[in-house]
Structures are given as C-alpha cells and as structure tokens.
Image 1 (tube, protein in one colour):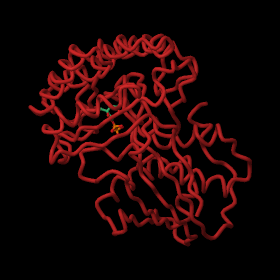
Image 2 (tube, protein in one colour):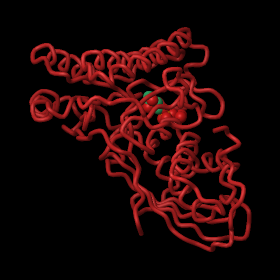
Image 3 (cartoon, protein in one colour):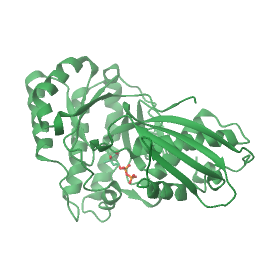
Image 4 (cartoon, protein in one colour):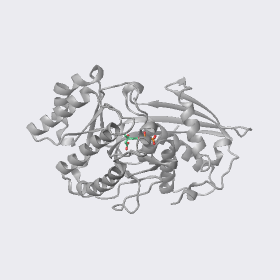
Length: 361
Ligand code: DP6
C-alpha cells in the first residue's frame, strides 16, 4: 500500500449521527523504535508483544454539524479533559487528508484506561489506536465501498502511527512488526503488520509483569526523545543493529531459543537507554531501583536457570518477561524480592494479547 491508497474517496455524509466503541491494548517493544523521520516514519524497524490487560476503552460519538472547523470534546474517566485536546488536535490535522469526514462532524471522545493514569505507563499506544479504530468504524459506516478487515486494520494502524508511532503496533496481536526490514517482505514503514512467521509454543501466553518503579510524568517525552537521535554519534550503527536484531529474532521466535531471546531483548532495552545517555542533551531515565531490579533478575536467573528477563521503555519502570510455565515461581520471586523497589509496592500483571476489540453499544 502507498500513502495515497489510504485516502477515503467516496463516502456518504448523509448519516446524521452515531456512536462506536473500541478497546485497544498497549504493547511492549522487543526491538525498540527510537528515532523517526518526517511524518512519523521510523528510522528503524521494531517489533512488539501486544499486551492483554493494559487497555484503553474509547467511545466516539459523532453528530453532523454545519461549519467546517474541527470540533471535539474529550472526556477522560468521566470528566471533561482539556489537557488531551492539543495532542488530538495535532492528530486530526495529520489524518484529515485520509479521513475527509473529520470536518463534517462534532466528535465526543469518551475514554478510560484499565491501568491507573499515574502509573508511568504510556497510554499513547492504546489511546491513539483505540481512537483510530473508532474512526475506521465510522469510515466503514459512511464508506460507499466495502472495507475488508485487512484494509480496515491496515488503515487503522496507518492512522494510529500518525498519532503515536508505537500505537500502530497495538491493533493486532500477538506480535507486530513496524518498519521495513528485509527479513519480512510485507513489513512497512507506514503501518504495523501482524507477525506471520512461526511462533514457538514457548512464547504462548508469554508473561509481562510491569514493576512500577516511578509513577511520575515522563522526564523526557517521546517526541523530544526521538529528536535526540538526529545527529546522534551512534545513530547509524544503532539503526543497523535494530535491523540485525529483528532478523535474529525471526529465527529465535521459530526455534523457541529463550537464551538467545533474552540476549536480544535485554540488549535492546539497555541500548535504548544507552542512546539517551549518549545524546546531547543526555538523560538517565533509569532510577536506582531500576538497576536494583535488573541485578536481582540476573542473580535469580543465574541461581535458578529461569528464563526470566527484563525490558524497559523510555522510563524507569521494568517490564519483567517470562514464559507462562514459570508464572508461579516468578510471581513469588517478585513478591519476595522485587516489590520493595516498586513505588508503593505497585506492579501490574499482564501477558501477550491478541489485539483490539470492537465493543457493541
Ligand atoms: C521507547 O510511540 O511514544 O516506547 O511516535 O513520538 O508518539 P511518538 O513516540 P512513541 O515512542 C515509543 C518509544 C519506545 C520504544 C517502542 O515502543 O518501540
């Protein structure tokens, strides 16, 4: 698909009003997206596990209006929210070429998350994907041509990317690739594609327990963060490394080799943070407790031969990844040895999921 193919051409704007609702999950990258070009095009390919429990639920109500200005209200967890509006305004401006009916309707956006707002968990992936899916459902209602599920998901991912890059990986599950890579001929810079390679049973229901080390606002927004890769002295090598790691993961996901999986995933997390430490300006987003947890995980792995590992986003929280067969033992380890490093002892249990769902209303 090319960019032009995503422009909706024929639609029936005679429909006066309606409501649609979607729930869409967060995702956790194994190979990280860090660095982007114009128009939300990634500098390197990434791959993520779609999550199951950490979700945004969004209802979008549309009502025909006369003027041609963008018009929308946002309600977050029941209350009118002005703080989210600028990001949504920017999103609408970026997508209006593809969704021409955006100016025909007033939109009421009612949204909530299944995870606490102040948990340090970014809601942009789940939030932007849920909103994009709602817009696609409206497109389907207005469209004069039949929209297949494949085109629906592809365009939802395309739109979500324009809201927040990683959001394009939240439409489907269990693994999604975004960004062109030679090992995956169907991969695209424009949208995420469901991982179509073999996935070994070792990865079935893979667990992600998110240790909330720091529930505060992010110290570096992702927009600022990605810009740090412009002119970064190690950028070129990093982008090449992401391509290589994705190619290696293809073999690992098929063979179920968890030792090799751990090497790639942990190295990717540390490289992401290394990029931040070596940019100008430079940042340390890990906290002392992040390092304590990493060292405890390594010691536990050494001692028990467990296949536990960690990954990080652009923050201090730690995602603890492990096979489902180890769930009981690892939750015991987390409760005994890691909980004390979490803010107020909080953590969230999640696992690999299958993507977004429409909710009947
Ligand atoms: C570190 O998708 O939040 O989580 O495109 O500016 O919205 P924007 O960035 P965003 O960046 C996520 C970066 C990351 C790694 C990843 O999810 O791949």
